[in-house]
Amino acid sequence: MLENLLKMLERGQDSAMLRFSLGNEYLRRDALPEAAQHYQAALELDAQYSAAWRAYGRTLLRLERLEAAVEALEQGIPVAEARGDKQAAREMQVFLKRARKQLSERDRDKS
Image (cartoon, rainbow, N blue to C red):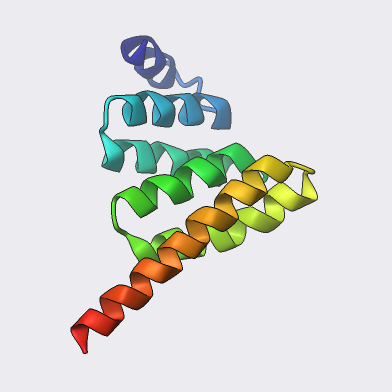
């Protein structure tokens, strides 16, 4: 599957859906940096892609890139809400709460 998606990209068939699919495939393989890269590319192609915001924010959280996760989730929640994607918005709110908590704990541990 991954090879087919990469071939499509090489042929210039770049799209938000293709990048989202690549992100999902890398995520499935636990290749988090690559997944994040493709989710980010999907969002550069379509900033209204709420599923990509959710996946991107969650992946950044798993990578412990907490500031970036907070930023992505804060951008993604209003997109999901505007699109009526209530489930994605709720999930992103949970991820955002988790990221903020981890940031707070990290900052407290540094003190």
